Length: 476
Image (tube, rainbow, N blue to C red):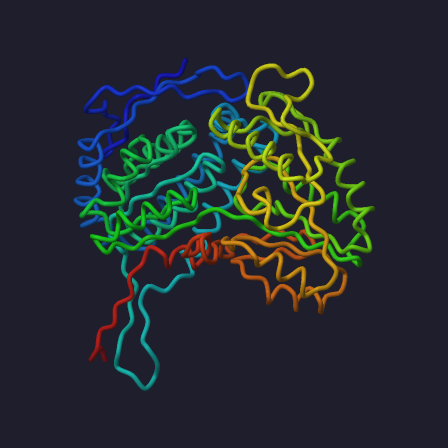
């Protein structure tokens, strides 16, 4: 049993001010494998105080100093790469090969890209040749960073690295369900030699430390990734202090499969949804299929879903693991039953445990057909390996159905007609549109429209989230 009860505050690992132990559960076997502490207001206040004091000197460091420290961090991250993968496999159920090739790799990629963006970023510039005004970008201050359990180190890197790069100080609250990877990352920060107080970590839940962070008068910005429900609460709690709030929230992406799509479009769409056990906010969980190929597409989808193996996260190979917790498991199973009760056709999977798995939060890759967009399974973010297939007749109808959601994070479309792809992409109301399965490049902005959040993470846009813009007149 791992014992990780200390917090990282002001450059030291310190015990919590009050005893409030919390067991971290391995979702593959439903057994605790680590003990952490949930912080109190005293712990949050101590971390914020340390960050506020550290900010005074840290904001004055040169870009070169910050690059040097980030490059040290990158070397340490590479050295402890396997440890990071093992942590996420245990805490959130990512199969170890997937944790290596995707989860941990994404953290490394973000560190590398932010170093590159920082090297080329201009913090000082003149407005134009005719103006004597000077424009400067300055760190916003103390940042509260609240990260989720579904992509742990990916989101930690997307928040912590640009905050460090721009000269901000911070307090990180990872998800209490999957905190071990963040604690390991804090060890790397410590080893890299960042000044004390610049980075602080306090574990806690949303109602406790999360609420304390979002409403704290000495925190200048909150960056949160998680549910839309929690995002609304954070926004309201932050309102009294008028702090900047950057949100990356839920999604209910559509995947439009036109009749002229490439041969494996349906199968690739199934793999995309089921990847990470369906626990991705930009997963294309509504597949819209042109009626002329609907029957064929349904057969392919069922066949592909039935090929996907479900197994323990510790095992190597190509399979999906469990969902993260009992709460998530129950929510997903209830929504699967809701789909059945609403009259959708359960074409693959379902609420029963996969064969041979009697323990763990495992869910079969599940497909519903004959779905209409007003059903709960088509409206709610299920956040599990569940797909709804919806037929459409015209391009306009596909666009209307896809946009008929309160979310707007990621949408997908499949067609070999390049002009149609561009035309449709422009009409989809989301922060990112994936054409024919092409992934986003490193350094591109990620974020949503409407109730999928605000702000952007990644690349130059990710740096700008942590900066204030200042105009100084009479500069020349």
